[in-house]
Amino acid sequence: MINTIDVEQKEKKYIRKSIFLLFIFSFLALSLALIFNISNVSTTDFYTYIAILVVIVLSTILTPKITKADNILLLIVNMLFAIGVAIIYRLNPSYGKRQLQFYLLGIVLFFLTFFILKTFKFWSKISLFYVIISVGLFMATLVFGSYIGGAKNWIILGPITIQPSEFIKIPLAFFVASFYSRYNEVSMKPFGRYYMNFVIYVFIGFLFLQKDLGTALIFFGLMILSQFVYEKDRILITINILAMILGSILAYFMFGHVRVRVATWLDPWSDINVTGYQITQALFATASGGLFGRGIGLGHPDYVPVAESDFIFSAISEEMGIFMGLAVILLFMILVYRAFKISLIQQDKFLSILAFSIAVLFAFQTFIILGGVLKIIPLTGVTLPFISQGGSSMLSGFILLGCLQYCASDIKYGDEIDE
Image (tube, helix red, strand yellow):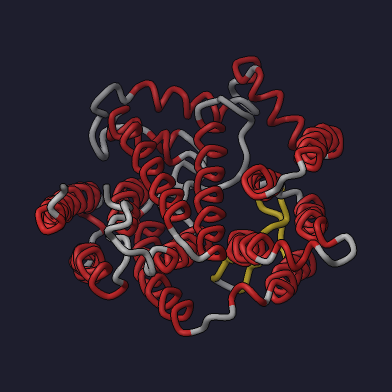
């Protein structure tokens, strides 16, 4: 028989070592980024740097004590953040400072989300509320939104820029969990089985109007995978897959920037100085780093347009090496694995499906942006969660992580989640 006390002691030992390694890595990465920009570093920057190191370590240590839940999730995300912010600060110190501020706010939202979910217990019964919130955000984007990068998915309020589609992922995950946790009840109503289909197609219609096709692909992916797991009607799944293919073809003929991206994906070398410039420079950067990278500040990731956002993986691979790029991919795989395992072990059906939905959202978003940067699929304008520069992506990611932390909070840790 397995000695539970020995297992817990070994687990605590591994966690302590992991936190120590997290601190060492964060310290070295942020220190190198500050040293590279030493001529522009102010006293405030130095204090912010110290505060971030303290928050990274303290939040990782306190999370399992406060939430009584999975103690790996935030550790993984803190590692991803440390990798990303070091590169962002090296590329653009002003973006780096903002990213540090978004991280601090994200940590607050992480714990706040956990305690709000823990305080109220009606989350599976208010599916209409999730739809109303989402439609309201879509309408606000259509009315007040601005075009950036070919898509109307940004609302600009003075110095603040918000991407509502990033936050719509949160009520979408709750809506899918609410629908399938009450599936027997909902399916008894006329056309109730198709309620989720109808709602998500409405969402995708809004995204088509905004020309935000990357997010539309993520929504489609969540719908189809959740149906594959929780739906018995395979014909409906086949119809949705065909609809996704048809929608992709339709988008190709409707939007000029989609045709350009597909052509660039197929042959970026034919117009290397114009349409193919971004992806070819990203591929050069990824390859030039070698296994161990050129070192922070010693590469040229600034040759790649928007390297701090869409193409940050190329910047990481150039200056930190292919090994660090692989480490980023593995960290995301572990994060998604933990989320799926929480879903499998969680006895509450709503929380189980919510954890599954969050895992799919993280997995799809990561695959879409990495696939685009590495020329596996056409490029879309989504961000790499917790790494890319951007407040909307960072904050919505931490809210989803807080939800995932709550999904793990009722699990008994003898129930194999830490095997």
